[in-house]
Length: 364
Image 1: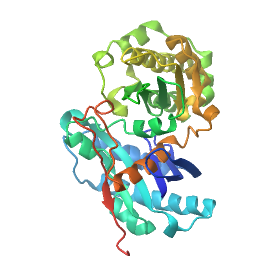
Image 2: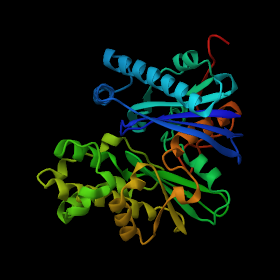
Image 3: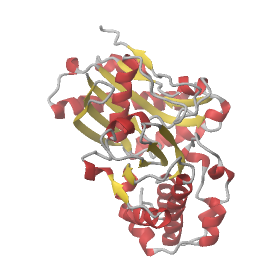
């Protein structure tokens, strides 16, 4: 099948769109990829909706959040059109879209997770069958609803020597461990780029620390680092998941811009090292995807903390920027085929289950 995956992460950078050919099993052939950056106005609107959603005890309609959801649909529909134009593929040839939507709050401890963006509206706008709301069924069944990408990581890692670990460094970091027998263990490890991005915006006006350049000039403040690591969440056995806003930059306030960036980067590295202690067996390789793989300082610190050499997935021919979008295309096909996307070892759900709501275009 030809499938499009759409991902808008908690970093609010923009929309990633991937076109892949897949059977939802071992066959995965990337066809095209496009990333569309949000405008400053769009980022501000989404940030406002997220801040509001985090104050609610459960998801409910509110004008700013409804407006943000409409923005998500419009933006994603536009990106689909551009991706198909780039690839020279007609919309009628695409079997399904996997539409993650925008997470505004993730509260599995309260029995809910909230991704805005109307799947039916996107199906109608594109004329393509759309699968959305991938996480809610898992949470309703007692799972964490995250991470979901491990089933795709396992497909990519089919020919690799095991055990192997794939570390995704997005706004939040998550790790997937694939054992020799194909067993999966996956969980969020802690913040990745999210805190550093927030620090950079507050302290320098920049959106992120390009290549980790500022952190490279700073000094890690051990007292602040120890304070941030003194959190019982890191000792919890997986499965476990986070909302980007579960951690803040407050402990680093008062440090210089460079020292704060260095300390927050070290925090990500140390949480990854702590996460390895929860794996059934130490991985032979640590493969790194997501925007954080471009941060040389972060990768150096991860190497120092873990004793492993972080290897950007691009060296294997995997597009580390496209992986999450490709994963949701892959999972959309699995949903159509009634194949599971979450497992006891990845989200803590009692038994493997599929997820996602299928929307068929009104014009069909």
